[in-house]
Image (cartoon, rainbow, N blue to C red):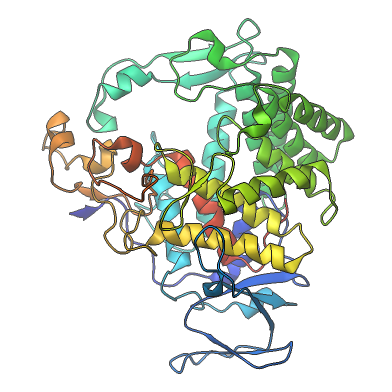
Length: 497
């Protein structure tokens, strides 16, 4: 078995991660050195009886660790994950406090984040840049920015004229009838273009949100690219609001249909307000938020995914008044209470995963964990903030192997080795690759390091075969929330958006 991409380096610059990985992923501000919560990982002990406690390094650790206040919960969470195993370091900590090698406990979160970017690079097609990891490997920050630039370039290129946007390239039916190397495909792929006769506010609102977020990230490092992203975001948002409709209404051969488009326009407007500070975008975000709650029962849909962006919008709008009870914060806290306690359509599995669906169960759990991490920085109640963070960490640790098996390819105990991924399964040429490889019980020819697969059933059961695509398929959206939480666990401060 060979590696599809190179293994990550053993050591990474955690100070660089702390400074910039979270802003890169979530378009937040740089860490605030005066209000910080850090994870206290296994391998270090807490001692002392006063409010200021000493964090003692293991005997094998020669690093110096300063005094800091420690807050930890010792009760058992209702989701079945013991909060006594999760401690958060609290105090006025600068980024210099985080030395290289600090995170090296039972899970190496730096390497996991590095591998998560590997997965995204493995999905690229076309002419690859020299920064692709098939050429080199270094720290994570530049790779995070590369992923954002790659995705933003795709969204910009799809805007082929002022009122034309390429909604999709490819056919689900054609793609699912082919098993082989992507570069060996020879059949024509259809392209679907939206215009004023086929309004697609859902797709355009999401594209605008993504580009506005990337614009905020690059504002201090590449002003020209930041301005380009913002200009495109504004143009796409105007296109989407001028002609209202949802793209899945036109018979497009697509896999991600929308229930309605108001949540997407609200999300786009909220990110544009975040990027520009212009009042009209805030007004639109609030108005579309209201309309989303009157469409298709969206207020009861407790999943943050391609069909429901309202929870991201609520986080963005709640962040405008951190610590203040608003309709947005109330909604987020209700969302998190359902996920933590297993209510309103959320089930807690026997081993502690908050679960909603057979197909890609970990996607929804990771996305909810991301909301928990982000919102935790908006609340002033440290016990509640700690609960949110510890619950999110518990969900990620489930995915990494706390219950006996890993759901991340190439990592941990008994990881998936038959993930439903054509490129990973196909051997190198001149060997052929077809449906015989799909059915072959042997492990994949390549290790798709860092890929989070769909996940287990409501009873924690999982079968590692390629044909079990509902449980064993990786995807860009499955990876997203997981990557964000990993980055949040590595940074000294989680932006409140």
